[in-house]
Each structure stands twice: as structure tokens, then as C-alpha cells.
Image (cartoon, rainbow, N blue to C red; front, side, top):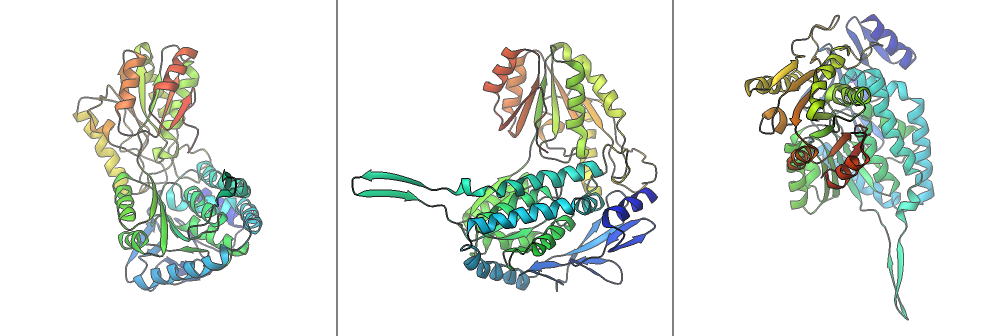
Length: 477
């Protein structure tokens, strides 16, 4: 634990942190220190304010169970105030030139780079990622902010002469107030997918970070203040069901963007549509890798091990299913050996490969699906349940787990496990493997490992997935 404290001291320059023997909690403009713990503030109209909520959600370090902060279930009055200020700010923000908004995005990306370590440390503490993954989380979001500096090319309209004396124009205009609802697994990247795009295109935004790890979003709000983004343009509210219900129903909010699980996503999409809002919902996944016997064995196994177990498997593009064709099935034991060598530990440990799962409930669910696989007749080649992690006896740890001889009807295959678990299925041919992948209800991504150009081309043209990898796992988080 001492190494964790030293890393935090370096990342924060030794200021603004209250250290304790079991970890660290952050004292800043966006938290209030109470008698027992810190309380996360709201960010409304450019100010960090204390919520008057009567209900609060505990945020615990998933590696230690230490209470990091408490998140308010934002009151109805506070939600109304946030929407009101976003609506007021929209009238002026939409009139700013695209060049002015681009300038703010350039300033914001510089601020994020400057505070990279602080953001990453918050993610490790609240979400549990290892430090390198946390920095990658920030970097992927930063790339979106950088792309917004070139937003003008994406906002060009069109002109068509439809008659000798008549032209038709299209003009891209901002919608107004939009909302973003974020998951726990990428506390910086996904907020940065949402609000910079909204702001750069002239909208104002209400953002709800995950109630499990809001710290990175709150720091991003502070950076927006620092670079001069006007009050009310970005507002951050917290909570659970009531906050989601407000964001999907309030008439001032014109569109909703969501990333997260299937159940919540369907609810948000349907409720937003019923209330006349645009909605985009990126939900669950079950990403496959087909491995042919002619593949470069070392490359394929190393790539699959990293893609399956990195970030403790808690990412929508995790490679969670391996489909091994013919003799490639003999390699499954070697994947298990590679996975067994990965170090599971607290995220600040410099040699850690993967950290804890987000909560005891998430851990219990993943473990239950591993048990279901065994009960259904699959073979648990490598069992990460009950792993002992030195120095972290209370963490939500599941070690890398490899399941072999699974089939398409098993729960370990049909449900998204969202943990460091690789489910392996054997197939007799590429055609059989493709049929399996295409029959799965999830279609986020799929990969193939092969030396055959013809097989790669066939896979690319016939697989029904939104993102396709050839000899690489899906190259997104």
C-alpha cells in the first residue's frame, strides 16, 4: 500500500490529498469533506455546489473497500436548475463562432494532457484499473477532444441548384440541450466521447457520470472552467433512476447519448423516444475471435490473452469468446498458461496486469456465470475465483479465467460476463465458426487470426459485426 501512496503523491504533487493508512481520498473544489467522508458536488452553471440530497451513494475503492466519496442522488430542484442553466447558456453558446469553440477544444486538450496523471489516479482509485490502463482511458478520450479541434469540416452544409431560379441548402445547426449518461468502465473516455462533441457543435450538455466513479468527470468539469468554457454550457448531475428519468423526459433536453448495459440501454432508448428525443445507445457485447489452425500461434495467443483479460474484462470491446477451428483447439491450454502468468493486484502496483472488478456484486455475478458454465458441462481450464491478492485482502478480485468446451446454449456464452473470462468454443470449419458468430445477438466486433488471405477476405465480407479485426483484436478499448 505504501507504493500506492507514493504514486498518488507524485501524481498530485503532494497537495490536495488527505492520506490514510489504507489509501487516499481527494480533497478538491469538487468534493466536500464531511465528518465521515467526502461528498461529491454538483457542477451547475460553472460552479461546484453542495447537493441538498437526502440520499447518497457510497463510492469505494474496489481494491480495498475504502470509502472514497459519497455521491448525491440529485434532487428534482437541482436537476431543474441544471437544465434551466443549460437552456439559458445555449442561446449565447450557439452563436459563438465555430473557430471560438475550436479554440476551447484546443485549450481543453492541453489541460487534459497537463492533468493526465491526476485523472488516471482518480480512475485507479475509484474504478480499479491498473495505472497504464487508466492513462489509456484518458488518452482515448483526449483523442476525441483533439478531433473536435477540426470539427468545422464535419459541419459543412450542402447546396444544390434544383431549378434555374431555385437553390436548396442544408445547414447543420445545434439541437440545444443534450444529455450524456455514462457507464463505470471508462470514467474519462466516455464522458469525453460525449460532452466535447456536444459543445464543439454548439450544444450545451447535462452529463451524468457513473455513480460508481464520478471523480474523473468532476476533474474534467474543473478543467472546462479553467479553460474558460462559459457557465451553464456543461453541467454535471449525479444519481441513479430518478436522474435518468429526468434526463429522458424533461422537454428542455433534446437528445440523449448512453453507453452501458442492455437493460438500462433499452429503458433509456425507449423512454427517450417516447418523449420525442433523439437517442443513441451503445449497449452490451459478446465479441468473438475466430482462430484458424494456420494462424501465427504466438501472435494469436498473445493478442487474445491481452484482449480478453485487460481492464479485468470490463470493457464493451473485450474479446470474450474464442472460436477455435480444428487443431487450433489444442492451443487453448496454452492461452490458459499465458493468462495464469498475468499479475492481479491493486492498480497502483507497477507490475500489475489487471486490477479488481468494480463492485462485490459484479464479482459475484461473474463468478456465478463461471459456475454455471461448469454446471452446464463446460470445462473450467483456469479458474480465477477465490484468488488471493497479497496486500489487498478485501478487493473485488477475479483472476483470469478460461472456459473450454462451451456451447452456444450455455449462459456463459449467451450472457455478457463483463469480467476477465474467456469462453472457448470449438468449431470444425470457418463456415461453422462464422455461423456461430453471426447467430449471436451481439454484433459489436469480431476478429480472425489466420495466414490465409482468402479466409481473411471471406471473414471480412461475411461476418455480421460492426467492427472487424484481421490478425488483431478489435483496436478500441
